[in-house]
Image 1 (tube, each protein chain N blue to C red):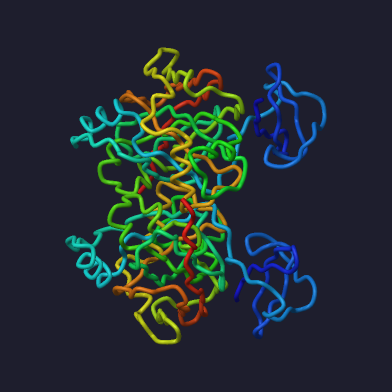
Image 2: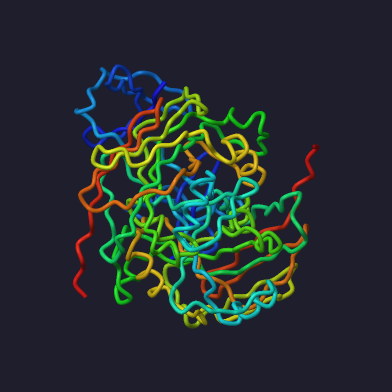
Length: 264
Length: 264
């Protein structure tokens, strides 16, 4: 089942993606809902980020080849985490599918995508175990952990390099039935495959992350957990169209643009 | 003017604190509102955290004596920031006045308050300058940047040491008219003054922080910016009552408790 969130006129609603269109619902995937109104075509609506996370968690380095490659790129030594390593992002940076990513005027050219599987929480939960952690998961969506690598060297908190406005595209919808072990993550720049990896090739899986996170933190419906990326991404530039496909979910597409320089 | 948020029965509302009571309003301080219903006594209602931040920003080390003292405590070298240094916290950790802080079962005894002035954003804004930054500010409240110092040594992202559930008390209300330069921050443990400092003795002020933050990030109504603390706090223990007073605003009071150890 695929849950989306969309805008039609001034109204924002949840919907179910069926046969390439959307069946609008009253309510939400986090509580009760009922189908409401006639099915809509995708070109009648604007898809939004599929959830509104109050807190947005992220796996630290969670794929071995990414850890090794990024260390080389950043001039540090690869030290893959030995346990789930929890980070978090700023909800202010979230945008939806097909919204432009706007690179700040004073950013460098070291601008990169990171294609990621993103877990969407469906139920309030704390003190989950690796055995029962998936009970709180509604489904999975796709994220682009967009990053300015030059700032990453000095932004210890990642506040700007990974959280500038528009740097966290999320979508296009939430797929409730997936087999993470069988999935592929494929990133295309202007239609060319730039990066492809096995989505499930993580150092620590979703259950392990959720059990560590919820030892100290309550997760709530709509919160998300970004699971990290593999390999070393390429640079992108204004005008580039990025597509992140995760097989079994869909494609998250966003175009890169650049903020105009400001006077003064 | 003092804005609060409160619960009465099942209903959450904003209100204006007048003469030791609360005048409920329909609407919010961020848009239009009108007084609604008769004034309520404080003991009739439950005060909530005075705002619901979507993103919760925090100054990094922002007082000189705190930077020097904490470096000594953590076994590092004091390197005060040379520009506003932006961090962020997890909204999941916010609690309101008089709610218990719950220390996780496996935490150490190195548990400390940090009394902080907290800026509450009133209007959506980006690209503020130091000259116009205060235009987006609704007012100021008080925060306790509660911290497990032992975890702080290993939690590079501060996800647990500063963001475990209940570690971010906020309140009791938002004061719109303050003179930061004249304010004192006073922390009492069980009625004894443990820490006192000049609130305005910051390395970088509110305007400077907001102008740097909004160079890259849009702030929204209800977002908050924690301004940091001075001096080196004391440890607290379960049973302790912490009161953080900032003159001109009020007193944020929370009791420290400890989570029961869990089987397994």
